[in-house]
Length: 333
Image 1 (spheres, rainbow, N blue to C red):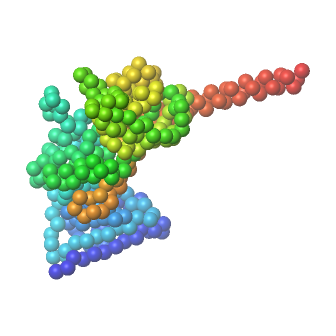
Image 2 (image 1 turned 180 degrees about the horizontal axis):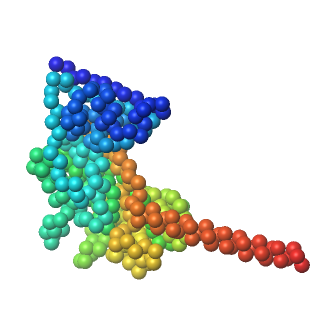
């Protein structure tokens, strides 16, 4: 029996604006609450063309719900793991899972054999909930860095995503707060990155030991004594962004390794690096569909930026008042 497909467009007059997605789906199909939860768990519900795993997602005007299911099948909810996963799921289907990495977690174990890594946590989740043997990371983020990371639910899927990274196909956009003000508002940093005995990375002219690293950047906003920048990676070398901007004289705030003294800031007390993987896009290895994801800035970065803006505006206002006083005094004379 062919699947039943139903659509619901949420316009500004819809009663579902601001409501939960599961209530709109229940209106579409009339199934029980348990069955509705099962539809979400089995990727039967899409919002704006992407699978929607969250029944509690709030709908907005302009959203389009697509429901695909077999009327004769019972869709049982899948057992959920403990609530505190240690990471946020951004997207998931049968082959791929994309998460928001917390800054404090290692992506994968080092030679020391750490066990409390993001890879461990994601693997535990897919084993417990999806009955998949393990998760496999397709790329990495440094400890201290937050943001989007993709995992495959099989080695083959993970390798297919890795192959895209090797060909520089995925879109990767980062936001960073760096010390000081940039010498140029936009540009490209290109160098060969090598590694010393202490595993520090540095640029070299030696083509035999260096790996080509290319970083594109643009100034997003000059702050009081720091800069908010947008970064696009053409290559993905370890510590690439951190090294490139430290060598420019503008280390990423909070970086304990590259120009750490200059990377310190009295208003950046967070025990993390002010670097966030904000956007990620790649082709789904099985369907070929372009998957695109975007995250907001983490709270600690937003607080710092707002503080810098406020101090900068206050300084400009004070300067303006002093100029008016001086000008007014001259006029009174």
